[in-house]
Length: 289
Ligand code: HEC
Ligand code: HEC
Image (cartoon, rainbow, N blue to C red; front, side, top):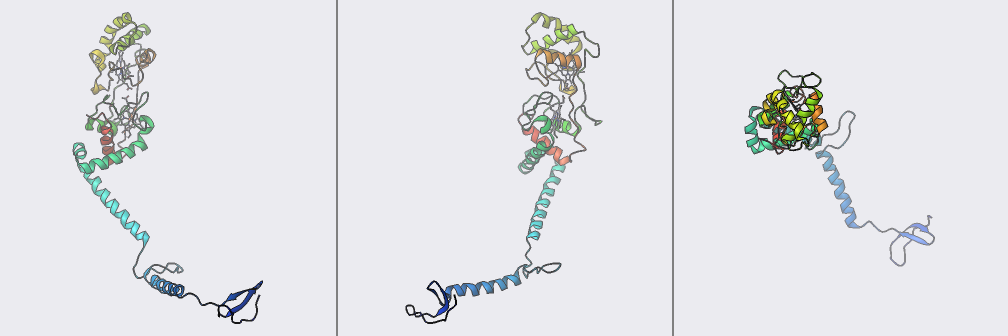
């Protein structure tokens, strides 16, 4: 409520004349420190408007005398990263796989890039930890269908296996029943022989009958003793590790109907740096030779 300003007897300060239920407002001056902070802020803000980008205009904004721009800073940083990357990628293109693996910088870059590309392109078939699945080989162990050297792995990734590329690795497991090369009974016997190679056969008579069948039909690709042949991508059949499965029924299936595992070619889909990085990464997983 407005009243008449007067001097307050107790404090000796003028009142503003505002009064609420008997409580009157004193007209004290603002504290000095507060005023100084206010003046300093006003001066600072004027300096800031002049130095830094501040006022919006119709089509643009005032740039300030320092020419500061966060966007420009980000662009510069990006350009720097890109230049650094282009540099390292040019080195990767120019270096052999062995040299990349030996150079700590290039190797580190390749491992990181390879891991990322693996997650994007390979994990769907080989598993996120490259552990594989039925029909999709585990890439962590040192059992290789086609070879585990840097060069072998690079070739496989580039051209694929039974892929659409002219240079693809290629060799089919023959379908012995479909192609009427063997009878059902012979297939059952040779399957027992295959199981006996890893000590998992339960019928030694059948395995004995299967031995000559194996000799006649299988050693050309799988080698005597079924130890496998990388030239032909023919798996080792004596090591208890199976690509498709080691129970009798699955082994019979492999022999009767053949197998055609397809690994795509990546030559046209990934750039050479990424394919080299993937080779280094896969080679590093544990089975590199
Ligand atoms: C569509 C499924 C699929 C995808 C995607 C795939 N692979 Fe494969 N990969 C296979 C199959 C199937 C084989 C085994 C082929 C065979 O039976 O010989 C294989 C085999 C391989 C081998 C050879 C293993 C050996 O023992 O010699 C390597 C190395 C490999 N893949 C790496 C990769 C990499 C790296 C990628 C990602 C760029 C990838 N694969 C993506 C299906 C796939
Ligand atoms: C022309 C070469 C060739 C001949 C001949 C051949 N194989 Fe194979 N075999 C392969 C290849 C290649 C694979 C792998 C197929 C794939 O990965 O798609 C394979 C796979 C297999 C597998 C699956 C192995 C696993 O780890 O799951 C079995 C079992 C097998 N062969 C048994 C035989 C037997 C028994 C014979 C003879 C009756 C035979 N193979 C003859 C090339 C051959």
